[in-house]
Image (cartoon, rainbow, N blue to C red; front, side):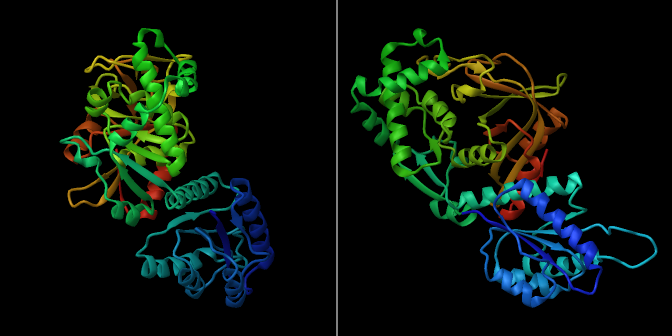
Length: 443
């Protein structure tokens, strides 16, 4: 279970009445953000009281606040006990009147920061300000979200279904690599296993899945009935596999197997799974699927997964597209439209433009030339646009210059799949990257 701890450290020689006021306000503010925090009964104004509190907790995030000045021994004790993310919080001096220094929190922060440099090579989050300040509240909230996702990753099971196609090796992952850097479990199976399972189902066994699909989509009467029935069988096979194996993330092979060996595309199956809470990418892109999972966790909404295919300098937009996969709930109409695959000419696949949103974040877990993980993060908005090409599309207007974004990201060697999240999660992604020890590249 995810737990965080609020650790207010100090010494009793400063103005304790002022410190108590900040202590009370801090607790109430954190409680307004999460119900997963553990609080001490009183300010921790001695090493003895600190050690007793630390002995009772097992946090996945610690918020260490200099309630007054405290020397480096306090934070050192915390770092000796816990190998988890740290947010260091400095309080603003409550009164500046030429009289007594009430808290001296800032000097304590320098002592703690120096210890964190030596213990963690400076990898910690920091915020300065009082509990009632929005900047402080937003920073703590974002750090909690990022730490929760970091913890969730250690409980996450990913399935790679089939190999990446030739030339798409950027999406491949090793099980030990995923475990080492994300704490997640990766299992791999062949696509034919689910194809063979789907073929064993009778039509009647899958009728419920077909009804569910037809409720979410329109234009299903234009699709060959056998393809619709075979889609329902494939959806049943994937859903059963997910449930039986406790899978939260799927990176599935799509072409050519499902066209050639099965006769019906998997695009709509993956689309439905996303709306059911399973982050699912196509073209066997494991790190793309993991990007979808993280973005969905942080935004609380399903995400779009696709290729950057078009640039409009005058409008300052980038269009992201895929040939038939997107959650039905992202459609810009009451029901998602389905059609046939633009290349293979069989369905069902998704065929619509995605709805607009005032804020959006484009994200990708990728690797640099040395194989080190890095995060692509770009803020912007999603415009209200019709379908741009056959398949599914979303038109993003970056905060930055779109041509500069494209030029720089191509030259930086980014993989060609990106996730478009419905929400502003850039700060949370930057914090998460630091927690994982990854580089952040903002565009």
